[in-house]
Image (cartoon, rainbow, N blue to C red):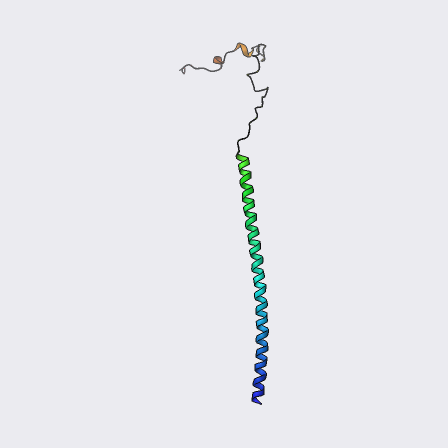
Length: 112
C-alpha cells in the first residue's frame, strides 16, 4: 500500500511540475514580447527626439539667419527728405530755419 501512495504522490508532483513549467514558459514568452514592444517604443522615441532636435535646429538656423532689413521711411521723423520749415510753428512766431542749433546748447564755461 505504501508503494501505491508513493506512486500517486509522484504522479501528482509530475503533473504539478509540468503545469508550472508551462506557466513559466508562457510568462517568458510574454516577457519577451513586452521587451520587444518596449524596444520598439524606445527606438520610436529616439527617432522622435532626433526629429524634434533637427526641427528645433533648423528653426533656430532660420531664426538667426540674417534677414534683409527693409528700410521704412517715416515721414514724421525723417528730416532728410523735407525742406527746412520757413514759416513759424510756435506761438512766438519763430521758424525752425531762423534758429541755429548752437542757440539750443551752451558750450561756454560755468558762470559763478
